[in-house]
Image 1 (tube, rainbow, N blue to C red):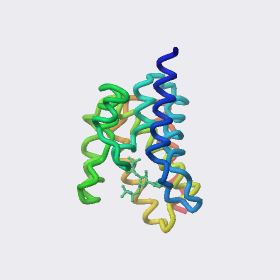
Image 2 (cartoon, helix red, strand yellow):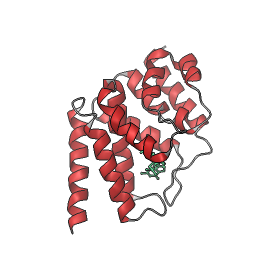
Image 3 (cartoon, rainbow, N blue to C red):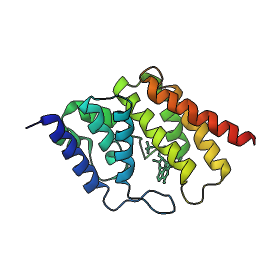
Image 4 (cartoon, helix red, strand yellow):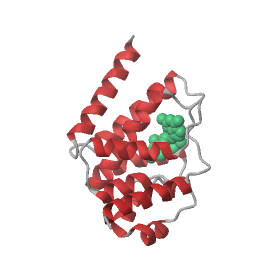
Length: 180
Ligand SMILES: Nc1nc2c(ncn2[C@@H]2O[C@H](COP(=O)(O)OP(=O)(O)O)[C@@H](OP(=O)(O)OP(=O)(O)O)[C@H]2O)c(=O)[nH]1
């Protein structure tokens, strides 16, 4: 058996099961699992082939947004994948502004693997905000998200030129749009 392929298929199955009742906040309420699959696709297209990073991308919102525990991830997928998922998991018990600041503060000292997942995650969120924003988000909320995401991803630079170039283009296009 190809164990890397098996790990990835188990991760996508696990994520689809855990996120089964969740939807994104866009108008068409896209199934949540589309986000984590999209994030993983961005990594693959950026040349990332490490199965631990790809599996962690598929699982990156399971602890934060479902009943999944860190030990469950470790039991199912091992320590390496659990470590990356833990690193990119926000502490939802914190107040929103503290949690958002923590992402900015934690980014520079994160592992390379966690930075890769963060960059892809933000690319997917920013692209979807441009084309199909969460319901109720006005121009200011969108701009605030771009500004915050830029601070987080600035702390993740130096790990993947392809994704960093995509982000540069997204931030620059958004600035141009804002000035019009
Ligand atoms: N663009 C977009 N985002 C959506 C959508 N549905 C849910 N989200 C999530 O909403 C978060 C951004 O909304 P905020 O109001 O800033 O944050 P909050 O949900 O954490 O309070 C993102 O999480 P994040 O904390 O930035 O990243 P993550 O680490 O949770 O992925 C994103 O994953 C959607 O339809 N479009």
